[in-house]
Image (cartoon, rainbow, N blue to C red; front, side, top):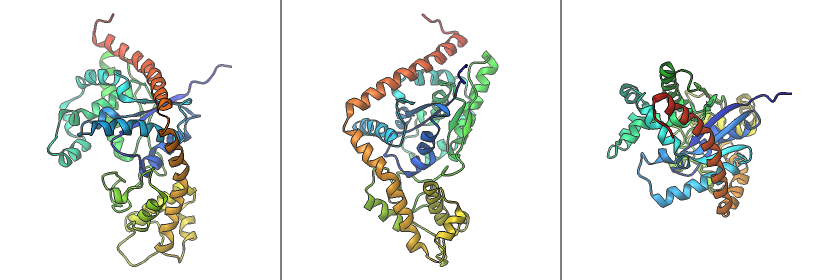
Length: 334
């Protein structure tokens, strides 16, 4: 019987800081669940990190630690292709070609460029402006069917699709045009102290890191923002009670319970009971991840071998696409 070809999926996270609960529930947990249904490529997007100044030694350390955390979260390197973006030169090579097929106006409209320009006004560099083109190259190199992203990243997939369609219209069927895949649950986890904003390492008090101790996690949830009224009632209302809705979303994603079931579970008990319960659920969910990551971080030889094998597999696939692109645009190849 002929084996059915799996659909391909690709995504990556910058090693610009420690992985946190939002990364796990919004992305990595879903990645691990899809391994039997898709051919999966996941990478550490270190090229993207340097649009903002980084401490070189810290970046190297985080790149290795993030791989350990990927594996601890359930990404088996035997079943997924795990690699470091900078280990595959084709990313940068294709990005230059795609720069020449991307319009200035398209890039100037990107929300992330506007946000980061405001945040890092003393370092508005060209890489920050062309960031979406490198992201398009990251994606199109591997000809994926789907790109799992959060709601806030949809714009990047859209410009990637526009670039691919434009290139294909000139040179024929070169790139597969990917579809964004957004998880219905846990797709966007908000900060515990800033429930109007996505959970971010830039607000550490409201961010739960995968390597946080149980005591730190419980402390952060006890201090989590709920709402400004005096209702003290666990009820899902994203508009009126964004802090409570965020906590319920986290609890639901970890326990599998519906919002109605959560409301019933904590009926009449108030936030003093609810917030510690969510904290305890997070502690138990992250405990095996933290312990396994700590073990893996001590085995640098193993992590280096995973990176080497991942880069070889990724380079094989990426190289085929790059050679095709180079031929189409007219580069003389040896």
